Image 1 (cartoon, rainbow, N blue to C red):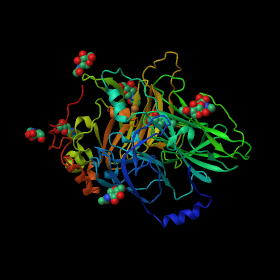
Image 2 (cartoon, rainbow, N blue to C red):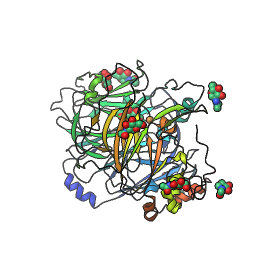
Image 3 (cartoon, rainbow, N blue to C red):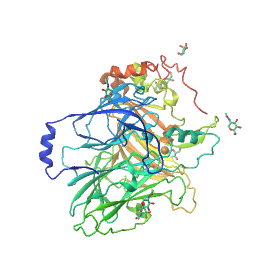
Length: 544
Ligand SMILES: *[C@@H]1O[C@H](CO)[C@@H](O)[C@H](O)[C@H]1NC(C)=O
Ligand SMILES: *[C@@H]1O[C@H](CO)[C@@H](O)[C@H](O)[C@H]1NC(C)=O
Ligand SMILES: *[C@@H]1O[C@H](CO)[C@@H](O)[C@H](O)[C@H]1NC(C)=O
Ligand SMILES: *[C@@H]1O[C@H](CO)[C@@H](O)[C@H](O)[C@H]1NC(C)=O
Ligand SMILES: *[C@@H]1O[C@H](CO)[C@@H](O)[C@H](O)[C@H]1NC(C)=O
Ligand SMILES: *[C@@H]1O[C@H](CO)[C@@H](O)[C@H](O)[C@H]1NC(C)=O
Ligand SMILES: *[C@@H]1O[C@H](CO)[C@@H](O)[C@H](O)[C@H]1NC(C)=O
Ligand SMILES: *[C@@H]1O[C@H](CO)[C@@H](O)[C@H](O)[C@H]1NC(C)=O
Ligand SMILES: [Cu+2]
C-alpha cells in the first residue's frame, strides 16, 4: 500500500508546510515496454523510466509540480492533470490538439502545474488515448488545513482495467465496418494499485484506527464497485471537492472519478476482513466468470486471524455513492443559470460506414490548429465560435456566466463526462428515452437537496439525463468529453472557449509550445484551418 502517516498533528504540519511551498520535480522518460500485468497476457504497454505502473505523484497544496517529460514513443504524447483547474495556465492542460500539439518523439517538454487545489486527482496521457495503454498515475495533493474528518493514515487504492491488446488495435476492431457494432467484447482484467487485483498486498488495519482510503478509477471503459463488507465508508471527498461526511456501503465509480472515504476499524483484532472490487461493464450481458469480475483483497488486523467473509448482495447500490445525495462541505449554494445547453448523445453508423458518437449534432474531431492557438491569435474574431471549425464543436462563453448542461442519454450505453478546468454542481438525474426492457421499473427524477456536490466527472447512466452547472470563471479552452476512451475516440466531445478576450490579455503561451507545433508543421496562427477570418478551407469534411 502507498501510505503516509498523518497522526493528529495537522495544525503543526500546516504551519510547517505553509513555509515550504516546494517544487516537486519528476523526470519522466515515457516509452514502450513489454509486461504481463494481469497474470494472463504479455503485451506492449506504455511505462515510465522502464517501469509500470507509473509511481504515484504526491504534492502539498501550494507546491508547483514540475514534470519533465521525455518522449521515447514513436508517436507524439502529452499529459493532463485530471481535475486540476490550471487557472492562468491553460497551456499546461495537456489536452492534445486542443491546448497543445503533442510532444514529438525524441523531444522533451516540461509541465509546470500549480497545485492550487487539495484532494485526489490523477495524471494521464491525453494524446491518442495512451492512458489506456498504461500512461496514467494517481496525483494526491495534501491539504494544509485539517480534513473534514480526522484519520490516522492515508492510503491509495487505484483501480484500472487492463486489456489484452493495445487501444488502437481494439479501436480499429470497433470501427471496422465489417465487424457488427458493438463488437464482441475483449473483456479486461482488473488491476488494483497497478498489479493483478488478486495479488495486491493486504491492507493493514490497527484496531480502532481511522483510515482515509483514496479510491481512484483510472479505467477507460469498465466500471468498478468498491466495498469493504463489515465496515462503513464515510465519503469526505469526491473529485477534489470536500463533502459533508456521508456513509455508504460501497462506491460505484465511473471512469475518471475519485472518492476519499474514512473507514473506522473494528475495536478487536479477532477477525480479518476482505475488500471487494468488482469490475463490470453495464453495456454488455452478464457472462459468468468474465462480466463481472470479482477481486477480493485482505484487510488484515492480525496475520493469520480467521477471515470473516460477508457476502453482500448486488443491490448494495441502494446505498451507493450518489452525487445528488452528497453535499458540498463549503456549503456553496446552487448558482443561478445564465445559459443552458441541452444535448442528446447518440452512437450511429454514418454513410462512410464508420460509427461515431456525438454529443452536439456533429462528431467532434480536432481541427488543424489547436483551438487555444486560434483563441490567442484571432483577436476579436476569437469570440465567434465559427472560426474554430464546425467539428471542434466550439462554444464561446462570457466570463463568469453560469452554464447549465443537460446531457440526455436515451440509450443502453453509459457515459462519464469530464470538463477540463472546472468542477460542476451536479443537480439532477432523471429518465431519458424509453428503456429497452418494458418491465424495468420507471426511472425517478432525483434532485440535490442542498449545497449541490461539485465534481469534475459525472456519470450519465443508460436511459438517464444528468444536469450540471458550472461557472465560467477560468478563461481558456477546455474540452468537455466522455471519459470512456472509445466514445471520446468516436467523437463524443465539445470544446468550450471561455472568455477568449480575457484569455488574450491574461496569458502568454510559452515559446516551447509554439516550437513543438512548428516542428510538426502545425500552424499556431489563424482559425481552425490555419487561415484568416472565416476561410476554413483545408479542414476535413464532416461525416454525414
Ligand atoms: C529530457 O527529459 C529526460 C527525462 O525526463 C531528462 O532526463 C533529460 O535530462 C531531459 N533533457 C533535457 C535536454 O532537458
Ligand atoms: C471507472 O471508469 C470506467 C470508465 O469511465 C467506468 O466504466 C467504470 O464504471 C468506473 N468504475 C468505477 C468504480 O467508477
Ligand atoms: C479473485 O479471487 C477470487 C476469490 O478467490 C475469485 O473468486 C476470483 O475469480 C478471482 N478473480 C480473478 C479475476 O481471477
Ligand atoms: C462482491 O461484490 C459484488 C457486487 O459488486 C457481489 O455481487 C459479490 O457477491 C461480492 N463478492 C463477495 C464475495 O462478497
Ligand atoms: C431537452 O430537449 C428535449 C427535446 O430535444 C426535451 O424533451 C427536454 O425536455 C429538454 N430538456 C430540458 C431540461 O430542457
Ligand atoms: C457501406 O457498407 C455497405 C454494405 O456493406 C456497402 O454497400 C456500401 O458501399 C458501403 N459504403 C461505403 C461508403 O463504403
Ligand atoms: C460569426 O460569424 C459568422 C460568419 O461571418 C456570422 O454569420 C455570425 O453572425 C457571427 N456570429 C456572431 C455571434 O457574431
Ligand atoms: C482560403 O484558404 C485557402 C487555403 O489556405 C486558400 O488557398 C484560399 O485562397 C483562401 N480563400 C480566400 C478567399 O482567401
Ligand atoms: Cu461515453
